[in-house]
Image 1 (tube, one colour):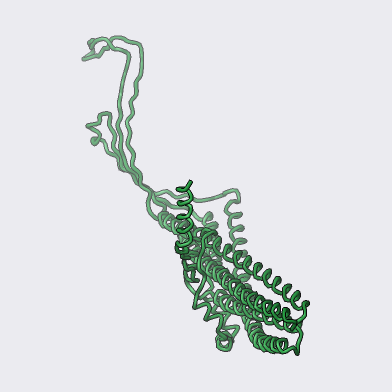
Image 2 (tube, helix red, strand yellow):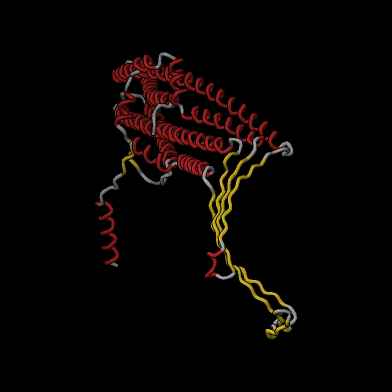
Length: 452
C-alpha cells in the first residue's frame, strides 16, 4: 500500500514538472507547402496531366511502323490402310516392303513482318495535334487547380488568424469586466455604489464569459477546417502565427493598390493573358477543330505499306533453305460507310461550336471576376477605414464613461454601453482587417499571374 502511494506521488510530481508539449509552428507558407503536396484536387489534376502526356506518346507512335516476329512448328499425321509399297522401275514392279499406314510430317517456320500507314486522310497529324492540345489544356488545368488550392488555403488560414484575434479581443474584454466587477463589489461594501450596479456588472461579466466561449469554439472550428483541407490530423495542435500576415493586416495601402488597379480594361486583358483556366478552354477549342479533321478523314483513301520475310522447311536444320520476301502497297478507297463519316463530321462540328461558346463564356466570367474583385477590394478598404475610426472613437468614449462613473458623474449603464461599443468596434476592426487582406489575395487570384 505504501509502495503504491509512493509511485502515485512520483507520477503526479513527474506530470507536474514535465515540460509542456511544444506546438509545431504553422505559418501560411507551411500551410501552402502542405496543401500543394497533399491536396486531392492537385493530385487528381497531376494524374490527368500525366495521362495526357502518355496519350501524346501514343499519338507519335501512330507514325511508326508496326513490327512483329513469328515462329512456329506444325506436325501432322495421316492414317490409311496398311499395304505393300510398290514402286515401278522400267515398267517392272519392285516391292519396297510393307507400309504401316501412318504418315508423319513436320514443318518449321519463322518470319518477321512490318506495316505502316502512309496516309489516312490527315487523321494521324490531327490526332497528334489533338493530343498535344489536350496535354497543354491539362497542364493549364493543373496550374489553375494549384492556384485555387493556394487561394482557398490562404482564406482558411486568414480565417484562423482572424478568429484567433477575436479570441484575444474577448479575453481582454472579460479581463477588464472582471476587474471592473471587483472594483464595484469593493465600492458597494463601503456604500459608494448601489447593489444594483453589482448585479448589472455580474451579468455583463457572465455575458463576456459566454462571448469568449463562443469565440474559442469558432476558433477551434476554423482550425479544424484548415487541417481537414490540408489532409492533416485535426487533433494535432499547432501554433498559428505569421508576422508577414500580421504586418499586412495593419497595412493601409489601398491608395497604392488603387493606382495599380486603376485601369479595368488593362486588368481584364492581363487576366485573359495569364489565367490558366481561360488558356485551357482555348486549347480545348483548338482541339475540337482537330476533331473535325479526324472525322472528315473518313472521306479520304487510306494508303498503307507492308513487308515480310519468312523461312520455312520440314527440317529444322534446313529452315534457311527456303526463304520468302514479300512487300507491297495497299490502297483502300471509302465508297459508302452508312453515313458514319457524315454523322461523325456533324457531331465534331457541333462540339467545336460548343467549345467556341465555352471560350466566350469563360471570357465573360473573367471580366466579371475582375469587376467583382475590384468592388470587393474597394468595399473592404472602406469598411476597414470606418472601423479604424470607430475604434478611435469608441476608445475615447470608453475612457470618458469610465472616468465619469468613477467620479460619480455618470451611470454604470453609460459605462457598460461604452465598453460594449468598444468591444464591438475592436471586433469589427479585426474582421475588416482580415477581409481587406483576403480581398487583396482575391485580386491576385483573379488575375492568375502567380505560379505555384
